[in-house]
Length: 64
Image (cartoon, rainbow, N blue to C red; front, side, top):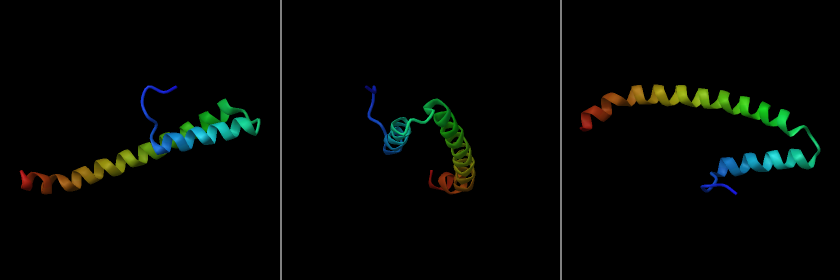
């Protein structure tokens, strides 16, 4: 049971992990690999978001 609703992405990843379990794979190893992959994506998105904020700051300040 989760304390709050899962996002669509979390549900997708939960299904991936459950399917790995059903296939008899080493879930811990697979999950660790997925987590590393997701961290890399998050780092990329963080850089994109930071660049976007920097680019939009002058426009936002003009509106204030």
